[in-house]
Image 1 (cartoon, one colour):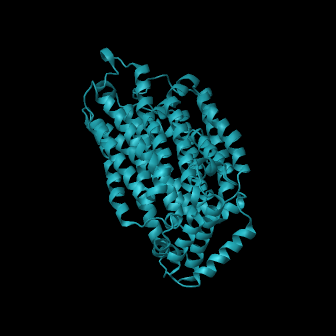
Image 2: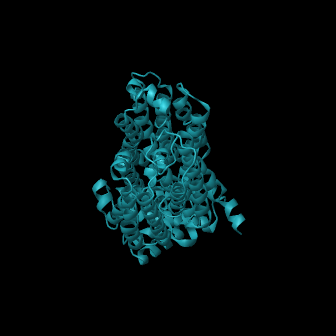
Image 3: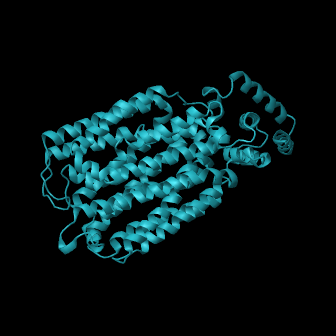
Length: 526
């Protein structure tokens, strides 16, 4: 039965696979910059070793800037994605943002001059960030709107699997470059240039997928919505279950139009049952960014060096193993756990586990500090204490991958209605990138000033804030997108049942309902 269900939704999985190649870029870009800038030859080429001596303050500043300017661009890309995807649809909005990303990737790849090369890298990272920000906002909405509720958590959760895939690729490409290329511009050109591979796959792959049925229905193109939904579900257009699903979609859209005629941004945010959803979307990503994973992910070589894995080979290899563990743990949870444990329990267990691991790491650093050496110094033997801390980081990322890694995107995609989903995903994505920028820009400074307290700080956030938040939010497992209005009080269960029955009756009258309902919508607008 499970196999039959998987084949039934094979076109939805294909759509998610294509749409989420942009998320591979997201993951790849989060991991690649810290590794590139940590290379001594990159630092020397761009003047960070005056008179042959490392300027640690300049290295920290450049590292923070190269990593964080991507997030700055992504913040604006995420905000701009809402009106664009609302007007042009999910598919073509993704095509546009992927093209923007490609321009930025080309700029970072061609940078070589010691005098203006860093400026090109900064500019390319900002432009790529705009593309990544738009993709990160639109892709989850696109996939969620096309997924049946039975497997939406698993399919939407592929977002984090693709992020983990991109991160892992970035670590091992940096590792491969480090041990095989001694100097020259290939040290950054190969890692930055590889971005064009997933961008090209996504750009051409988008030409093979259909537009979101929910978006089509929301703009009155109901016949296309029915045909696309039938295509995605692999069912005939007169199938009873298919028509019931479309009736649910249209009932929700009709209710939203009746309740929110002339919707503006004020009404979108403050309409009945909406504000709490936007608060959840903002806070959930604020907490995710301060759980510590992105600090480790962006600066994995530097973080592993801080616990005793010094030298490029040691720190980059330890980072690569971290990427593999994250990918495997995320994949196992998405395919076997996300629809079993539920959202709330997964969030809570994840927060507790992460906090405990970080408390242990902080305690070990305090009692068994690693030798005081440069991050580029090579050590021949890793101490048992350092190995223990690395093991805790690997266990930590397993807990992250079973909750606070993949589930925020799943949860936020769950809770918004069709009319305001693009606003909701844009706010969520903007919150993610805003705090992502803050964390990525400040991580190295915080780590240098706090020492072992760096890990204790994140442990406190994990248990104190994230654990509490997990217990306060409503459960969404197994609920349709249309049921979210009932959960958040936008509409009563009785009214929703009556509206579904009305549209089911209209659908029973024949397949010509597309034009009829378009006229109904025109009358409603009038």
